[in-house]
Image (cartoon, rainbow, N blue to C red):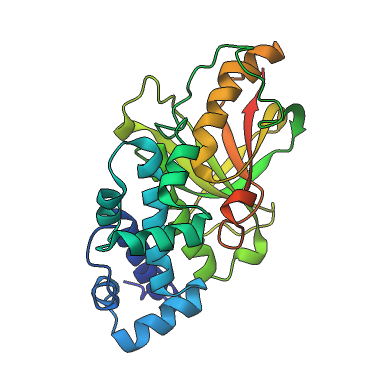
Amino acid sequence: MTAQPPATSYESRLRRVIRHIADHPDGDLSLDALCEVAGMSRFHFARVFHAMTGETAAQAVRRLRLHRAAFDLTRGTDPVDRIAARSGYDNADSFVRAFKALYGMTPTAFRQAGRSTADAMTFTTVTPGETDMTDTYPTELRACPALRLAALEHRGPYHEIGRSFSDLATLFATRGLFPQARALVGIYHDSPEDTPQAELRSTAGMDVAEGFEMPEDLTRVDVPGGEHLVLTMRGPYTGLPAAWGYLYGTALPASGRLPADRPPYEYYLNNPMDTAPEDLLTEIRVPLA
């Protein structure tokens, strides 16, 4: 059997750690526990993780825990202290401080601001003409180019696709592939209205140039170009369900056009790693017949 190259061996260990953090936000995510998941000594693990991913293990834990908490705040009615505990914070005050540092507002204010997004990625129907949201959700008909994606497939609730994006970003970081990356793209293949959450299929992809050499453990996904209805949303990703609802409930019917028999997708115009949540820009693109 061919020996695995050292870089790939390290990469697989770090990807295993990222998946473990995403799957167990309320578990023991201490440095010692993550070292055990990685199968590396404490001395080496911290240095390898930071050098290969660009963030410390503690930063990754905090980011993924708070990302999960943001969705919990908008999807349910559990009190903040319970969400804090589920996110691995024994002290609610520490959770509030950490959340505000990342999202720019307290968990309570965030919940109030995102109350309309009660179920992530549910295409809520809005009566056409019921409210004018053209300034909040500007839309346009646009000819979008074809895309070539280096991708990982995801199955399960759409709001959990973040773990696949984290896995993809780790892979790109550890292999030095980010200079060839253009933007992250999320494709959503099923309607949450008639598909059980556990069976939803989505794709976490990286838009790459035609000359990109596809790694064996990534899937090439070609997205056809053509005319699309494009909605641009500014703000945290937790606001996307409301934007989807407006797009399908108001903007698409008002356009007088029918969607093509291809899945819609999100095109992320900037990077959440270095962009404040309120400044994130996301395009939702629906292919038209």
